Amino acid sequence: MSSDLAIDFGSATTRVADSRGALLVEQPTVAAVDVDSGRLLGFGDKALAVGVGTAGRVRLVRPVRHGQLVDIALAEEVLGEVVRSAGVSRLSHPRVLACVHVGATHVQRRALDRALRQAGARQVRFVEQPVACAIGAGLHIEEPEGIMVVDVGAGTTDVGVLALGGIVTSASLAIGGDDLDDAVRTSIARRFALVIDQSAASEVRRRIGTVEPAGGRPRLEVLGRESATGRPASVVLSEAEIMPVLEELVRPILDAAVDCIATAPPDLANDLLRSGVHLCGAGSLLDGLDRRLARSTGLPVRTVAEPGRCAVVGASRCLAQLDAVRPGVSSALRR
Ligand SMILES: Nc1ncnc2c1ncn2[C@@H]1O[C@H](COP(=O)(O)OP(=O)(O)OP(=O)(O)O)[C@@H](O)[C@H]1O
Ligand SMILES: [Mg+2]
Image 1 (cartoon, protein in one colour):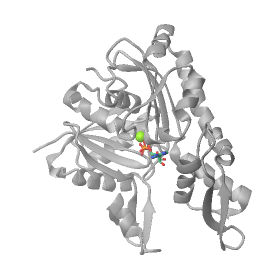
Image 2: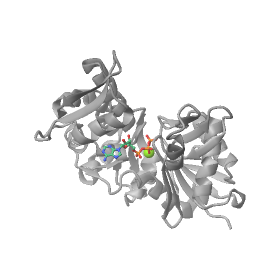
Image 3: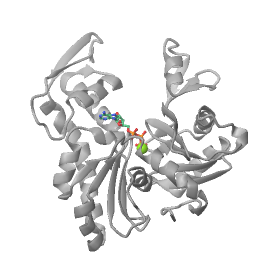
Image 4: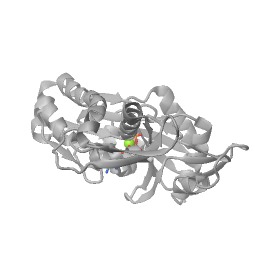
């Protein structure tokens, strides 16, 4: 039996849902690869489990960076695993609706199309993230009223103003939550000569990272190693010390949102005063981002429920009209 699938092959998280909206897969987009043979040993949590304790023989690879496939052959294998773990046999040749960033080029879409077909899909269609997110958030995108979506992921941010089922103005930036973590890590290395790993940087960002400090959060001790000696060491950080690091990356996101509104037709821009900005993507959970976006745009801002899942849920709701989605480079859904 064939079943249609909505797939969001994200830079950090891969999510798959069926046409009833059931979430079938939610796994870290990471693969464990045997260093000698190049064989795929596992995907997602299984890859992380395989990687532990097999230092040197197993390489953990992230096949999607900044929303783009970085290793197409590996992506094909990984997507095969993804389809299988969704409980769908390759032989059933599902139709797939895949989320893509608004900035995804024709070549990038073709690469994803090819990888999904190799993974067993008999037909691949695309839906841009802002459209998928808006539908996932329960917004009525086919109405003439302007709607705005800002999707902050792990490696990309998509901004879009939508009306009548399509994107009117948009922007895509190669900035997401993982870039914020990298910036925190680099800053701590430079200022304190302390090397910390990605997960420690992520913890710093989540616990004391803010782009609008309200004060009152306790300082955080961060463990790492002295860069000169490799000896264990730590530093105690406050939110005020981390904020300028995050600010540098968040500023372009705020600017892109303001630009999108400025270039939208005036009546649609006016609609946004009522409909507001819908913040999606798990990266949007950065403290203070909603308040800063509200100040920069002068619009009400609402973070959607389950922001990370919003795109795949929206794509799953489109599966019923899959035949109406134009092949290749669809920027609009005919609903
Ligand atoms: N509670 C939280 N607070 C802050 N950041 C968070 C939180 N939960 C997840 N994140 C961050 O959100 C990012 C992942 O978001 P999401 O799952 O939307 O990305 P993705 O869809 O895989 O990536 P992309 O859309 O960029 O390809 C990661 O950088 C993660 O650290
Ligand atoms: Mg995403």
